[in-house]
Length: 152
Image (tube, rainbow, N blue to C red; front, top):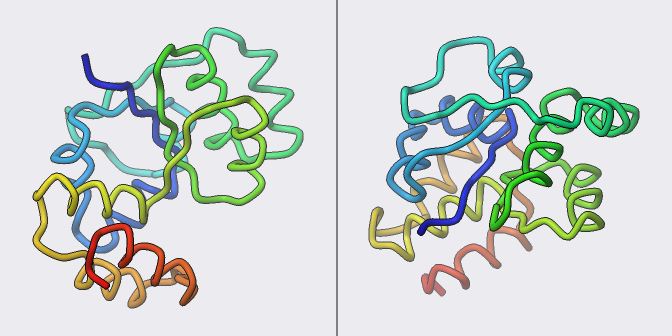
């Protein structure tokens, strides 16, 4: 059985902005997200994205004291799912998810996964597309990504 993947808003936004939303489906299959994430995204998501609400609304509200609704709802949902990875890029959200012992990846991790599964031949064009948006890609993160994907 495949690990369940929960995504926050930023992953959808950035991959959609570079025309590569499908890379999520190709890398992971179906993705879970929340209605709060869909609302933040602001447009329809593909059918392979399942919308599910966290059961513990109080926990989500507590997370919202420190995070945006999308991130809080994604983390609250991920906590409730056994064997789950949550896609987060915001540092504060990642730190909270780590404290909750969640498995975390980010947009760069999604692209590395696609390369390692031979879905894409190289991550370099995807990194360049990201640089052409408002996504901040540090040289350290870029070097890490290239190393993890075997491209340096």
